[in-house]
Image (cartoon, rainbow, N blue to C red; front, side):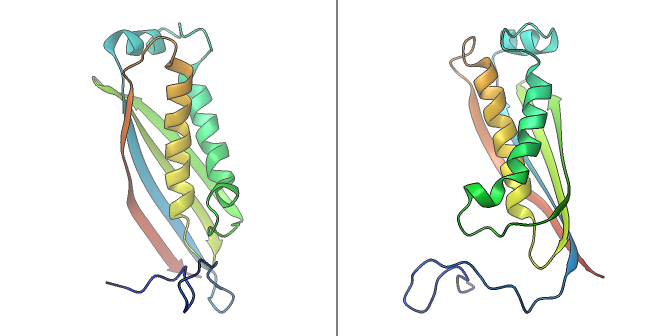
Length: 150
C-alpha cells in the first residue's frame, strides 16, 4: 500500500505541494446512481415535479459542484478547469449520472468529477424528496483518469 501523501511526518493533514510537477492535460470520469420510485421517474419524465426541471437543475448543480470542489474538499487543489460536463440517463431503477472534468495542471481532476456526480445526485434527491421518501444514492465511483504530457 502506498504512503498517504496528505499527511506530514507526524500524521497531521496537509495539502500536497505540487509546485515541482509539470503541467499535463488531465481528465477524469465518474459515475453514480440514485434509485427512484417508478412514479417519481414518471414525474421527472413528464416534468411534473413542482420544484422544476429535475434533470436540468441536477446537471447545472453538478457542474457548479465540480467547479467548487476545492471549497468543499479541504485538501483538493483549486484547479483552473477547462471543462466539467454532467450527463444524466433515466433507467428503469432511477437515474444514472456521468461526469467528466478536464484541466491542464499539476494534479488530477478526480475529485472534481466525483463531486460533480455527487452534487448532481443530491440535486435530484432535493428536487424529488417531497414525492419519494425511499430514494437511495449509491455506486459513486471514479471510472477513468488520464494524464498526457504537453
